Image 1 (cartoon, rainbow, N blue to C red):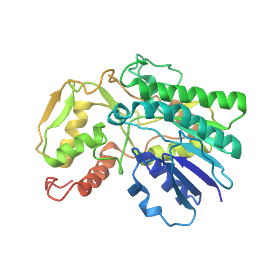
Image 2 (image 1 turned 135 degrees about the horizontal axis):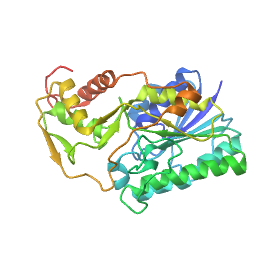
Image 3 (image 1 turned 30 degrees about the vertical axis):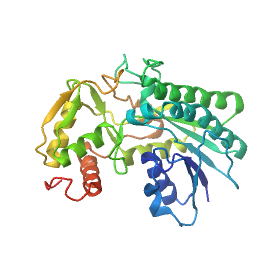
Image 4 (image 1 turned 90 degrees about the horizontal axis):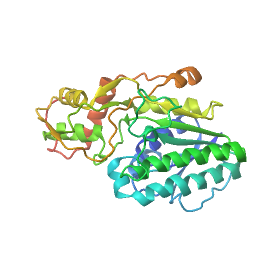
Length: 321
């Protein structure tokens, strides 16, 4: 039976990965300091054979008793709200946290997968973004603490692979949504859905012409699973190449929730907000045989229902999803 360590496993994406590993018959040790992760994401696994939770900051050295076959390093803040609130922690988990996780993998002879981000491309001058694009990042901007932490971590992972023989993989995750996102996450999906369900104005930053591509979480987990079992060591994009403007997305949320919320426009939330974001998934198709399967409407309906249930009684509108 394979045994994995998942850092950040109490987070949105991490907890879904833990579910997949457990469903595949793996034993899983989750390490999370709960700065943004939530124990409720793992509550259904507590007490199950083969599952263990350790509350620990991976920026501090750690070890795991017994064999480890795989280390999945997902620990990090991941939204503008979080990395603006925790800038030093964000930089530290990308640097110290990544090296500690790599050291564990080397010590145990385990494979290693690092969850990077499309933010390494910054506000891109190339569209769509392929893995050989080096990006357009402001290293001293507000978003730089996250962008540069991930860029440094990628460099560190490749150095461990090239010079220490670590068996590593890097996934660059594009905008992902689904159940277990926090209501106060600050990203587009929870913002729009919660505003629509509450009957509040749906706030679009700028004129709404900036684009994003949204991938459902189950598609991402399938891509991570396939990459983890491949022999590919360079960074690889996992995301949905179906691009939409933020205004189109707001209109879709309004329609799917049946909300009467008006759409209003505000100044940009953070500087250096990317004007375009869309993955080139050619490598994922060729190397992994992967592409997204869940349509945006199908995934959003599931996500809307999740948020509807989580909102306090009487807080959501009565319009059916």
